[in-house]
Length: 272
Image (cartoon, rainbow, N blue to C red):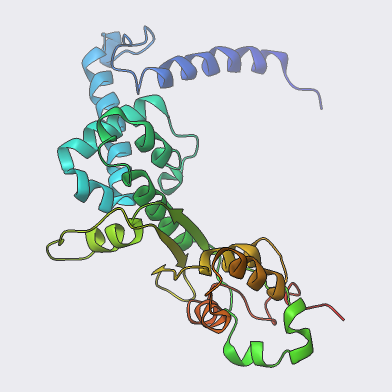
């Protein structure tokens, strides 16, 4: 069946009108679209402006829900002013609000008034990873018994599959400590932000786990996540940190549920 040409003709103006209507929602300097009208065909500039403000406020609220630690650090007024500029610069592309704000950490990094807090963007990256881990697919995590079932001669060649919720965030600052302190109840004590920290974010069961990694563990886990065998991953960690404890690194990946069980995927140790 051929499409009705008249239907296409009717849709074209509707799409153009929709684009004009949407474009003005995040830009307060745009005039009310001429096609917007209220009851009895009266002008509806006030109604449109109320709707426009509600859209912006909803998106700012969505960012505040994703980045509570960042908002606590900066204060509500500072955060909402920063978020408002981000909303105007980066409109949503998905109808799912939890998907909004992926570009926010990069925006924070270059935001003029946040330059005095150079660790703030890494804190935002950890919080974004937190939300992504929360919404990731479920999978059975690798257990100690599952790993112990692999013959010793095959351990070095073992390739592990990361859990869908596993995320790594590396920072030149104490971003893990900063986020953990500002997402917890109670007062925040003074933190030395100059200490580099690496974050592991996972969700082996219902709750998201944020863990500060020991030196070498980020290199170890990153290599495993990229698909390198266990022996190579250990070598990569030892190359950067000669004192890296391989046993402790393996314990971390088991305790945090960062990788999935052999029964959940054929990606774990299929080497002959």
